[in-house]
Length: 73
Image 1 (tube, rainbow, N blue to C red):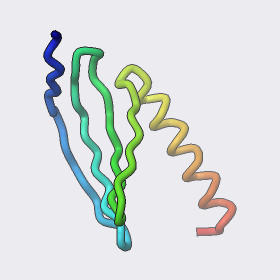
Image 2 (image 1 turned 45 degrees about the horizontal axis):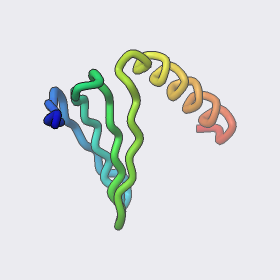
Image 3 (image 1 turned 30 degrees about the vertical axis):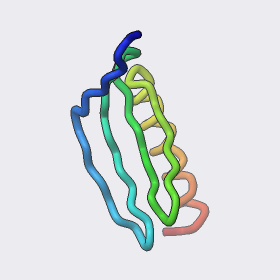
Image 4 (image 1 turned 90 degrees about the vertical axis):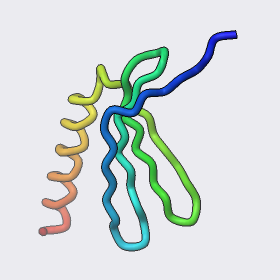
């Protein structure tokens, strides 16, 4: 049976209000990925394959800019 191992390359976190967000760059047998985990009573995560990380960042920045324009901040 194949052993499933995970290597962690980068790990950061930020606390916002009553939530803590972890940003972890890891690697497993499928390749590198970014895992964003939210802790706020429970735990939920999203995983972004590293090949799409710049596209993910660009869409996130675009969405933040558009939402700030709507709110007027």
